Image 1 (spheres, rainbow, N blue to C red):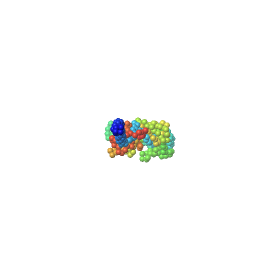
Image 2 (tube, helix red, strand yellow):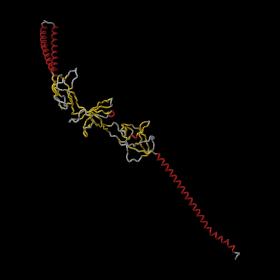
Image 3 (tube, one colour):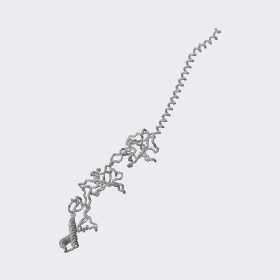
Length: 406
């Protein structure tokens, strides 16, 4: 028994090896599987890291590209009204304003009207005392009588000499002389008669009458004042008469509007001392010439004044509606770019900025009028950077309210 025991040991080891071989094989596969899983996990982790970094790089590039695009605020130009209201100062004058003079010389006997009096055409205003004129008339009538007597003698003499000429008792020369003297005496009578009529007409000017309906605005004489109507001395103005039922309002219109004001345009007139009161008028005529000192056009607006509320010489405010010569738009003044090539405005088109040449009309301060280059549909960039050039990509800022209204 003791000799067989060494032979049984190898058999047991072989049996043990045979039992451990499947276990070792399974363990190898497990290790291999673990390694494969580890490699796969590692690959996934690496891939995810690479993908994350790639996405981060892409996002960084996109962020940088977006940051490079300028964000701008825009506003649409405001279309101006087709007409403008001109508010200009004006001066009222009576439709007819005339000084009243005496046609005859003498002393003022009486006056019948004073300032503020309303008179009608043909109303007696004053009377003159003209003693010298009466004496001149008496002398002229006497001279006329003398001339008529001389004419009668010349007529008789001429008739006699014509009868004597038939019998050849007188010469033809003497007869012609008598006939010429008769003609001269006849002309002298006509001259004296005309002088008498002139003096009689002057006597009619002893009474001063109103030439038209109106208001006496000035009286420059008094009873006993010497009135000299002679041509060699300055005449004294007795009264000043103004027709105020209609007034002329003279307005100086700036040259820029000279081509737009036309006769027939309706005007409204206001006064500071009559708030809420509006008077209607019509532009009746223009001077058709520019005043070189003020560069303005003088126009006349006629206003009915039946109640006399408007006074001649008053300062008035005239409102005129005139057509615009051009179609213009208004933009904020901070949208302008001053470049060497001229005035420019940035406009957004298809996501890019475009510099547009414009021409300014009137400057309102915070806003300016653009008469060419823009339309109300354009998106104008506000506060454009000085580095802005055409073709630059831009992004519109969120705007809850568009500025730039006038």
